[in-house]
Length: 307
Ligand SMILES: [Zn+2]
Image (cartoon, rainbow, N blue to C red):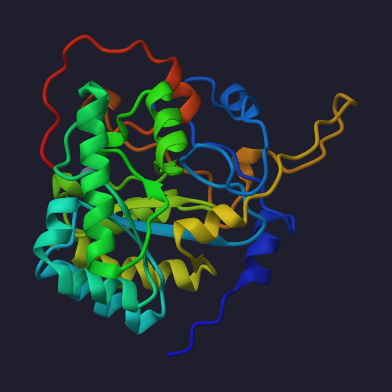
């Protein structure tokens, strides 16, 4: 029953008492360090877009998208409650309206609820009025069900251009939350694979992406959550994680004199393993916000798979 964090063991493994995070390099191998260096620190949680958070402890946020689901979400809530884990639910507005009682339970049990659009379109391709409606209707649905405001948006497929993200921030004050751990659970690879991918990718400050609409994902959770707890990770909501954001490490002016651990070796377990998938097949590509902003805007692309 007791699950004591093994933080001291983790600190030894990391070789430092402070974990230093870097953005997870994308599968394509683009220049992640340059992108990370481009982020200026405006204070905890103050940037517009996050795919992970630089923190000084073993904290992670697990997020569940696309629900609530009438069966899977309550089962997941039971598992989270049993372990005293707080998660963040990026809900679809129309599902929130369909299952207000589940919404109330999510809120009552201390989880964070956030906006994932009304009908899960690829927002980046839509006119501003439609984006506004997708976001506002969902905000209203969350408020109707829980009486609470929300402060975070995850665009479906992570698809929102840099100027659109800034517009969302200035219009609603929402931070845009992406992820750095993606088990691709929507492809239904089986619970064991979902679990293994999350365990191999999670590091301090990670934002883990999962979906509470898939049976495999729910089946993966007991083992996944127990293993992460056993490794010393502590679960917080995304908003709590943002409040923990640390400034970037000071730049060394003396070449050859490191001031911090190399980012690639930070973390309690191992260097994150690149996902063994063709990046082209990703419906929701793992890119840093800066990398995403630099992408050429696509000419018509195939409709993303339903997830
Ligand atoms: Zn989604």
